Amino acid sequence: MDGTLNYNNRKVEKEVARIVGTFNMQDSSIDTIVSTFENYEMRNIRTENLSFQMSINPDPEAPGEKLSDKEVLSYAKKLMEELGYGNQPIAIYEHHDIKRTHYHVVSIRTNEKGKKISDYNEDYKAKRLLDKYAKEFHYTPAGMENTKKRQADMTESLRFDTQSGNVREQYTKLFDEGMKWHFTTFTQFQTIMKSMGIHVEPVEGDSWRLIMQGLDAKGNKTSLRISQEEIGREFYKEYESRARECKEEKTADKESRAEVAEIKKRIAKTIDICLRLSVSESHFERMLQRKGITVTLSRGADGSIFGSTFADSRSRLTFKGSELGKNITAEKFRRAEDKETGQWTRLEREHEENNFQRAMDRAALISMEGPEPENHPDSEESLRDYETIALELLDEILNALPTRSGGVKKDVYGKKKKKKGKYIR
Image 1 (spheres, rainbow, N blue to C red):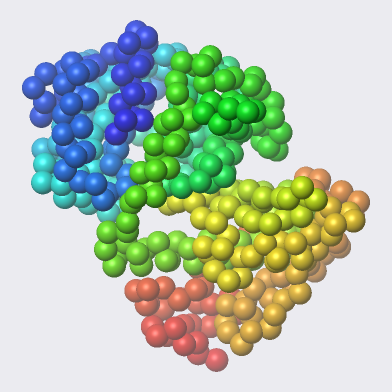
Image 2: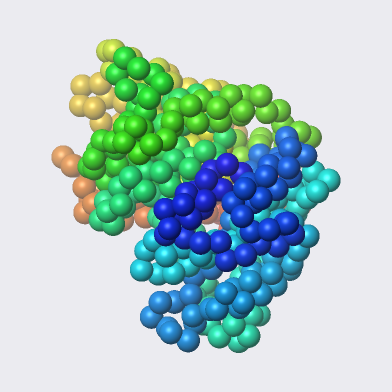
């Protein structure tokens, strides 16, 4: 809970936020809020993501949507009760650090007995509640019918914005977001921050201090280099504490281990397909980013690739390439790269006798029907159609894979699949 609480409480101390009220706490002071959540946090050491934070955003261009303190508390209470947090400690903060006044509703995902509160279909439930209470609290729900666009907007909001200013505040906010991920090494943490548009590195000769710098959309360093002393936070110690905590964590049960295994399979399959279809390292990175995965390729003094690290924004997990299976190896990346030109060379496909491999071969063949990119394979003009086709096919392939729950789907050949994973030919 530290990252979420520190973010909100520092805003209060800087007088750009205030505590509107609390539920299921003795009072609404910062000390009481912190101690209450600490008490709950101590009752469960297994749940990975304890922090619950919801944002309420009245439209500043619609004066009728403005909420009084009483309405905000009533609205938050109704939402939290129906999401399963009615008996949880809850703190509501009003933020006015930007032109749009908004509210953060903070709670914890485990109850007084240390049991995890179910978050099954939480996004769908929130959408339903948003519509349900629109009339009572006089607002118009934002257009949420396009789920993919909504997810893209959410991802975009968690990136460094070169245009918005407030560089120190952005660095701090994104660092706190990075602390919510699971990582055990500094390279993994760097990959997480890279996914949010921040480059982090230790001060030369002093590994106990960090420097941050913003990245543009292409990954180029573009903003001020600011050390942790200039912000007033011991970022490296916070990183080290979180990394140690992640190392000590053990997957709690068989179901959680199975879930992580499924995540690894999804990431590995996405990497494999993007590697086969990409024409350069930067193109490979872009294709993965559009699937919510950020990659860091580690290189030796001679420039050769000796390792890889992947950060998955959907699960907030990071993995070394070697953890994702025998196919994601440094040797495979070395074979993909042409040392003379620095460009990517499509790997020869190994014709294994399985449906997934045949689907990948077909996808690669279809995507290469047009002319090959020349001279500047990374230019937007030459890759626009190619990349769109490749990513659409990737979605098609992943959707055609057998699911744990069975059911009938169509594979990429348009034939129906039986429940046991066999195909009707």
